[in-house]
Length: 288
Image (cartoon, rainbow, N blue to C red; front, side, top):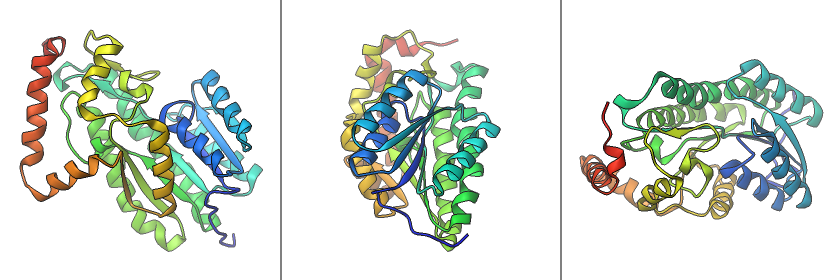
Protein backbone atom coordinates (compact mmCIF):
# COMPACT_ATOMS: atom_id res chain seq x y z
CA UNK A 1 0.00 0.00 0.00
CA UNK A 2 1.30 3.46 -0.87
CA UNK A 3 2.23 5.34 2.28
CA UNK A 4 -0.12 8.17 3.17
CA UNK A 5 0.03 10.88 5.78
CA UNK A 6 -1.43 10.99 9.27
CA UNK A 7 -4.18 13.55 9.84
CA UNK A 8 -3.75 15.81 12.88
CA UNK A 9 -6.60 15.77 13.78
CA UNK A 10 -9.04 17.09 11.21
CA UNK A 11 -10.62 14.31 9.19
CA UNK A 12 -8.78 11.62 11.15
CA UNK A 13 -10.03 8.11 11.88
CA UNK A 14 -9.43 6.96 15.46
CA UNK A 15 -10.22 3.83 17.45
CA UNK A 16 -10.42 4.09 21.24
CA UNK A 17 -10.61 0.95 23.36
CA UNK A 18 -12.16 1.63 26.74
CA UNK A 19 -13.68 4.67 25.06
CA UNK A 20 -17.02 4.79 26.86
CA UNK A 21 -15.87 6.58 30.00
CA UNK A 22 -12.95 8.25 31.73
CA UNK A 23 -9.88 9.09 29.71
CA UNK A 24 -11.18 7.27 26.64
CA UNK A 25 -14.40 9.28 26.60
CA UNK A 26 -12.54 12.57 27.14
CA UNK A 27 -10.14 11.78 24.29
CA UNK A 28 -13.02 10.97 21.96
CA UNK A 29 -14.78 14.24 22.71
CA UNK A 30 -11.60 16.26 22.28
CA UNK A 31 -10.90 14.55 18.95
CA UNK A 32 -14.36 15.60 17.82
CA UNK A 33 -13.72 19.19 18.91
CA UNK A 34 -10.64 19.13 16.69
CA UNK A 35 -12.60 18.00 13.66
CA UNK A 36 -12.05 14.23 13.67
CA UNK A 37 -13.72 12.46 10.79
CA UNK A 38 -14.55 9.20 12.58
CA UNK A 39 -14.18 8.05 16.19
CA UNK A 40 -14.77 4.39 17.00
CA UNK A 41 -15.73 3.78 20.63
CA UNK A 42 -14.90 0.19 21.60
CA UNK A 43 -16.05 -0.86 25.05
CA UNK A 44 -17.99 -3.44 27.04
CA UNK A 45 -20.25 -0.73 28.48
CA UNK A 46 -22.80 -0.46 25.67
CA UNK A 47 -24.99 2.22 27.18
CA UNK A 48 -22.14 4.52 28.14
CA UNK A 49 -20.43 3.91 24.79
CA UNK A 50 -23.53 4.96 22.86
CA UNK A 51 -23.95 8.04 25.06
CA UNK A 52 -20.34 9.03 24.37
CA UNK A 53 -20.81 8.39 20.65
CA UNK A 54 -23.87 10.65 20.61
CA UNK A 55 -21.90 13.45 22.27
CA UNK A 56 -19.24 13.05 19.58
CA UNK A 57 -21.89 13.26 16.84
CA UNK A 58 -23.30 16.44 18.37
CA UNK A 59 -19.81 17.93 18.08
CA UNK A 60 -19.84 17.17 14.35
CA UNK A 61 -17.84 13.94 13.95
CA UNK A 62 -19.01 10.50 12.96
CA UNK A 63 -18.99 7.97 15.77
CA UNK A 64 -19.37 4.20 15.79
CA UNK A 65 -19.85 1.95 18.80
CA UNK A 66 -18.32 -1.53 18.92
CA UNK A 67 -19.07 -3.84 21.84
CA UNK A 68 -15.63 -5.21 22.58
CA UNK A 69 -13.80 -7.21 25.21
CA UNK A 70 -10.09 -6.63 24.52
CA UNK A 71 -9.37 -10.06 26.00
CA UNK A 72 -10.99 -11.59 22.91
CA UNK A 73 -8.19 -11.47 20.35
CA UNK A 74 -10.34 -12.59 17.44
CA UNK A 75 -12.95 -9.91 18.15
CA UNK A 76 -10.23 -7.26 18.37
CA UNK A 77 -8.80 -8.36 15.03
CA UNK A 78 -12.23 -8.27 13.39
CA UNK A 79 -12.89 -4.76 14.64
CA UNK A 80 -9.68 -3.33 13.24
CA UNK A 81 -10.14 -5.09 9.91
CA UNK A 82 -13.73 -3.80 9.68
CA UNK A 83 -12.71 -0.20 10.42
CA UNK A 84 -9.85 -0.33 7.93
CA UNK A 85 -12.17 -1.74 5.28
CA UNK A 86 -14.93 0.79 5.92
CA UNK A 87 -12.81 3.91 6.37
CA UNK A 88 -9.81 3.07 4.22
CA UNK A 89 -7.39 4.27 6.88
CA UNK A 90 -6.68 4.37 10.62
CA UNK A 91 -4.84 7.44 11.89
CA UNK A 92 -4.86 6.86 15.66
CA UNK A 93 -5.18 3.78 17.83
CA UNK A 94 -5.78 4.62 21.48
CA UNK A 95 -4.96 1.34 23.21
CA UNK A 96 -6.68 2.54 26.33
CA UNK A 97 -8.77 -0.21 27.95
CA UNK A 98 -7.51 -1.08 31.42
CA UNK A 99 -8.44 -1.92 34.97
CA UNK A 100 -6.92 -2.24 38.42
CA UNK A 101 -7.34 -3.86 41.82
CA UNK A 102 -6.33 -2.07 45.01
CA UNK A 103 -4.76 -4.26 47.67
CA UNK A 104 -1.44 -5.37 49.14
CA UNK A 105 0.09 -8.14 47.12
CA UNK A 106 -0.31 -10.93 49.68
CA UNK A 107 -4.05 -10.22 49.90
CA UNK A 108 -4.82 -10.45 46.19
CA UNK A 109 -6.81 -13.41 44.96
CA UNK A 110 -6.17 -15.32 41.75
CA UNK A 111 -9.09 -13.54 40.10
CA UNK A 112 -7.42 -10.18 40.82
CA UNK A 113 -4.16 -11.23 39.19
CA UNK A 114 -5.97 -12.76 36.22
CA UNK A 115 -8.27 -9.80 35.62
CA UNK A 116 -5.52 -7.18 35.74
CA UNK A 117 -3.02 -9.15 33.66
CA UNK A 118 -5.56 -10.36 31.10
CA UNK A 119 -6.81 -6.83 30.37
CA UNK A 120 -3.75 -4.65 30.96
CA UNK A 121 -1.30 -6.97 29.24
CA UNK A 122 -3.33 -9.45 27.22
CA UNK A 123 -5.73 -6.81 25.96
CA UNK A 124 -2.93 -4.42 25.05
CA UNK A 125 -1.14 -7.19 23.17
CA UNK A 126 -4.32 -8.12 21.29
CA UNK A 127 -4.72 -4.53 20.10
CA UNK A 128 -1.06 -4.28 19.07
CA UNK A 129 -1.23 -7.57 17.15
CA UNK A 130 -4.37 -6.46 15.31
CA UNK A 131 -3.58 -2.80 14.67
CA UNK A 132 0.17 -2.54 14.17
CA UNK A 133 0.39 -4.56 10.93
CA UNK A 134 -2.39 -2.41 9.44
CA UNK A 135 -0.55 0.79 10.33
CA UNK A 136 2.67 -0.57 8.83
CA UNK A 137 0.85 -1.60 5.64
CA UNK A 138 -0.67 1.85 5.14
CA UNK A 139 2.64 3.55 5.99
CA UNK A 140 1.39 5.88 8.72
CA UNK A 141 -0.52 6.02 11.97
CA UNK A 142 -0.01 6.59 15.68
CA UNK A 143 -0.38 3.85 18.28
CA UNK A 144 -0.96 5.41 21.71
CA UNK A 145 -0.71 2.88 24.52
CA UNK A 146 -2.23 4.05 27.80
CA UNK A 147 0.23 3.19 30.55
CA UNK A 148 0.36 5.24 33.77
CA UNK A 149 2.70 7.07 36.10
CA UNK A 150 2.52 3.63 37.72
CA UNK A 151 4.46 2.42 34.70
CA UNK A 152 7.35 4.65 35.71
CA UNK A 153 7.36 4.45 39.52
CA UNK A 154 6.24 2.00 42.19
CA UNK A 155 3.07 2.24 44.25
CA UNK A 156 2.07 0.14 47.26
CA UNK A 157 -1.50 -1.22 47.14
CA UNK A 158 -1.30 -1.34 43.33
CA UNK A 159 1.53 -3.80 42.71
CA UNK A 160 -0.05 -5.85 39.92
CA UNK A 161 -1.40 -2.74 38.20
CA UNK A 162 2.06 -1.20 38.44
CA UNK A 163 3.65 -4.32 36.94
CA UNK A 164 1.28 -4.32 33.97
CA UNK A 165 1.83 -0.63 33.30
CA UNK A 166 5.61 -1.07 33.39
CA UNK A 167 5.02 -3.67 30.68
CA UNK A 168 3.12 -1.12 28.57
CA UNK A 169 5.88 1.48 28.91
CA UNK A 170 8.60 -1.02 28.00
CA UNK A 171 6.63 -2.33 25.04
CA UNK A 172 5.95 1.18 23.77
CA UNK A 173 9.57 2.34 24.04
CA UNK A 174 10.80 -0.72 22.18
CA UNK A 175 8.13 -0.56 19.48
CA UNK A 176 8.71 3.15 18.92
CA UNK A 177 12.24 2.54 17.64
CA UNK A 178 11.13 -0.29 15.37
CA UNK A 179 8.04 1.52 14.08
CA UNK A 180 9.79 4.69 12.93
CA UNK A 181 11.23 3.09 9.81
CA UNK A 182 7.69 2.17 8.75
CA UNK A 183 6.40 5.72 9.20
CA UNK A 184 4.43 4.66 12.26
CA UNK A 185 4.50 6.45 15.61
CA UNK A 186 4.24 4.83 19.04
CA UNK A 187 3.76 6.68 22.32
CA UNK A 188 3.08 5.71 25.92
CA UNK A 189 0.50 7.86 27.67
CA UNK A 190 1.34 7.98 31.38
CA UNK A 191 -1.45 9.60 33.39
CA UNK A 192 -0.96 10.40 37.02
CA UNK A 193 -4.15 10.49 39.06
CA UNK A 194 -7.00 11.82 36.90
CA UNK A 195 -10.60 12.24 37.99
CA UNK A 196 -12.18 9.23 36.29
CA UNK A 197 -14.24 6.21 37.44
CA UNK A 198 -11.01 4.19 37.67
CA UNK A 199 -10.23 5.91 40.99
CA UNK A 200 -13.07 3.98 42.59
CA UNK A 201 -12.55 0.78 40.62
CA UNK A 202 -14.20 1.53 37.31
CA UNK A 203 -16.70 -0.89 35.80
CA UNK A 204 -14.83 -4.13 36.69
CA UNK A 205 -11.93 -3.24 38.99
CA UNK A 206 -12.19 -3.33 42.76
CA UNK A 207 -10.60 -2.69 46.13
CA UNK A 208 -10.03 -5.70 48.39
CA UNK A 209 -10.69 -3.39 51.35
CA UNK A 210 -14.10 -2.46 52.68
CA UNK A 211 -14.00 1.18 51.64
CA UNK A 212 -16.67 3.55 50.43
CA UNK A 213 -16.11 5.43 47.19
CA UNK A 214 -15.71 8.55 49.32
CA UNK A 215 -12.82 6.97 51.23
CA UNK A 216 -11.19 5.74 48.04
CA UNK A 217 -11.30 9.24 46.59
CA UNK A 218 -9.88 10.62 49.84
CA UNK A 219 -6.90 8.27 49.44
CA UNK A 220 -6.32 9.48 45.90
CA UNK A 221 -6.43 13.15 46.90
CA UNK A 222 -2.79 13.04 48.06
CA UNK A 223 -1.86 12.52 44.39
CA UNK A 224 -3.70 15.69 43.25
CA UNK A 225 -6.05 14.20 40.65
CA UNK A 226 -6.35 16.31 37.52
CA UNK A 227 -9.40 17.21 35.44
CA UNK A 228 -9.97 14.67 32.69
CA UNK A 229 -10.96 17.23 30.05
CA UNK A 230 -7.79 19.25 30.63
CA UNK A 231 -5.85 15.98 30.51
CA UNK A 232 -7.31 15.04 27.12
CA UNK A 233 -6.57 18.48 25.66
CA UNK A 234 -2.94 18.42 26.77
CA UNK A 235 -2.50 14.76 25.79
CA UNK A 236 -3.67 15.33 22.22
CA UNK A 237 -1.33 18.33 21.95
CA UNK A 238 1.64 16.19 22.96
CA UNK A 239 0.56 13.24 20.81
CA UNK A 240 0.49 15.61 17.83
CA UNK A 241 4.09 16.53 18.66
CA UNK A 242 4.95 12.80 18.67
CA UNK A 243 6.39 12.60 22.17
CA UNK A 244 7.54 9.18 23.33
CA UNK A 245 6.47 9.21 27.01
CA UNK A 246 3.65 11.59 27.86
CA UNK A 247 3.31 12.31 31.59
CA UNK A 248 0.22 14.28 32.63
CA UNK A 249 -0.98 16.13 34.69
CA UNK A 250 2.25 18.09 34.36
CA UNK A 251 2.90 18.42 38.10
CA UNK A 252 3.81 14.72 38.12
CA UNK A 253 6.90 15.49 36.04
CA UNK A 254 8.62 17.24 38.94
CA UNK A 255 8.61 14.19 41.19
CA UNK A 256 9.58 11.91 38.34
CA UNK A 257 12.59 14.10 37.50
CA UNK A 258 13.70 14.13 41.15
CA UNK A 259 13.41 10.34 41.38
CA UNK A 260 15.69 10.01 38.36
CA UNK A 261 18.23 12.48 39.74
CA UNK A 262 18.41 11.18 43.30
CA UNK A 263 18.88 7.41 43.70
CA UNK A 264 16.80 6.02 46.55
CA UNK A 265 14.48 9.02 46.77
CA UNK A 266 11.56 7.22 45.16
CA UNK A 267 11.68 4.40 47.72
CA UNK A 268 11.82 6.89 50.60
CA UNK A 269 8.91 8.99 49.36
CA UNK A 270 6.77 6.00 48.44
CA UNK A 271 7.59 4.42 51.81
CA UNK A 272 6.35 7.54 53.61
CA UNK A 273 3.12 7.50 51.61
CA UNK A 274 2.65 3.84 52.51
CA UNK A 275 3.19 4.49 56.23
CA UNK A 276 0.86 7.50 56.23
CA UNK A 277 -1.81 5.50 54.43
CA UNK A 278 -1.73 2.79 57.07
CA UNK A 279 -2.11 5.48 59.74
CA UNK A 280 -4.85 7.52 58.06
CA UNK A 281 -6.79 4.62 56.56
CA UNK A 282 -7.01 1.85 59.19
CA UNK A 283 -9.31 -0.14 56.92
CA UNK A 284 -6.23 -0.70 54.72
CA UNK A 285 -4.26 -2.46 57.47
CA UNK A 286 -6.11 -5.71 56.88
CA UNK A 287 -4.09 -8.94 56.98
CA UNK A 288 -5.08 -12.47 56.01
